[in-house]
Image (cartoon, rainbow, N blue to C red; front, side, top):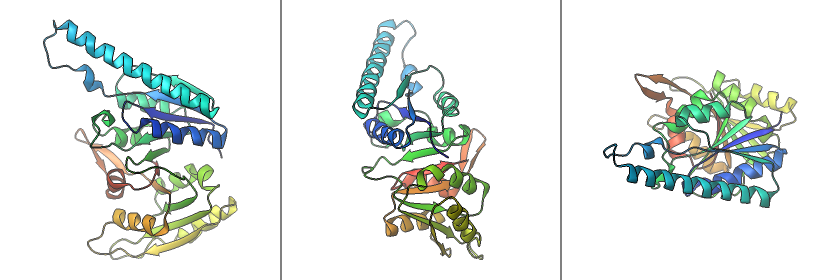
Length: 275
């Protein structure tokens, strides 16, 4: 398995360039074609003023066009310097639906965690969550804090025996096949041992030419599974977490699994998620 078409979400946030840099590095690593998809908040086009105030609306549209032009130029310049095959897209339409649709034609989509200190990183309510649940493709979500120095050299695979975990593992084979270290981590639920199939996952990976160790950690009262995984990542100095993403819509809200929510809110390294 390999990634031949990558898609990176581009916006006006201060982390967009770093996201593009990671995507370009991956594209070069896998000799893949990279699609830059420019999608920003639709709220910018819901101005709180009378409809006859055409001058202000025109100014907003001009500002948007200028930012899009600047983002396009920066993307093309970075791609030329990297020597990478790329394509630019800036389609109209609702943010989540647009990104999910275009992501379905890619092997991997690169997204960025929302930075609460950067208003430009807001695209739509539950944007990352909804794209993850609706695109049908694995997503690599980059944290807003810190710099991605390495990616996929030291990997932690979160394993609980679920369909989502199995899909994430398979979707990550191209990345972890090049890793120096792979650790399968299972966290036991309260009153039960950790899933006994982690050793089977290790055997599965070995048949793909990937050597992996595994560890099981009992659940601790008062400490969530997400927090336990974050501690493992820190202890192992991992630079990538692979995990299944859990969630479903409920009464106009996206209800996420606890570990998924924890990672999207508190991730310290890039996370490859599949749903």
